[in-house]
Image (cartoon, rainbow, N blue to C red; front, side, top):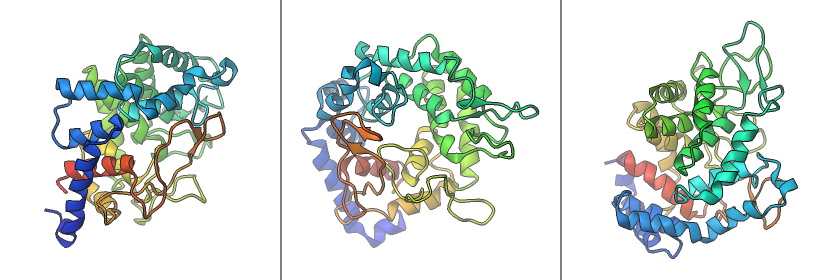
Length: 341
């Protein structure tokens, strides 16, 4: 048993009560995640029926407003965070049921964009003479597309080519980077976790070893840093989001590199039992609130019913270091449960 749980057994008990309460929620997004944590077999008819209800949940209805956008607005595939790309990412996050044909045009639009000439040229993609093994590209875009296409059961004919291209762009150290400076020779951790998750999901679902191997190379890159800390001096890795809370804070729902997301990716890649995850697990566990939940400490999302910069049609719950957020709580408690904490 984890030492912290021994010191604060009341918080561990509160976490159990919180999961049990959320398992009875009228919101199928929360109920589905909570019941799985309580032992519901995800392949059971009960779990599949509950997941099916997510399609009619308030969150799903909100996110699906992307289908009603004016075509001129929807043209911006990557629009933060209400365009097709991020809407699909968020639908996958809430366990939207797979195989829904209404989403296929959005997936096709994303693939059209990712195979367009514009996507493959500077500034989105660049390679320098003598550095052909370090293609400069924001691989999180491709990684998310592979992940939600797989998770939503909407893999199309071009997805395998997207997977192979991303593998081919993997840097020698195991990650990816969009830094256009020629002197940049090390991968960006902010651009590595999402591709690792996407490749692993595809490789596992489609039994494709090159994708699984590439994902594990990426995992090793971040595990060498104990997920969040530099090897050189032990300082916290500081991505280029200066002025915002760093990766020791929980960022949600848009995730690139933070303590919760890094551990979620380690869960997906079956690497959570690596001892190098322990410092991040300790950091996450220390954020447990008296009610047993976890806070949504940082966000760049504003809930809005119209298209705005960094907007979301969905309400992702309360923000603040002292307030439990139901979705964040379930995600954090699932990680700690899988770690035996």
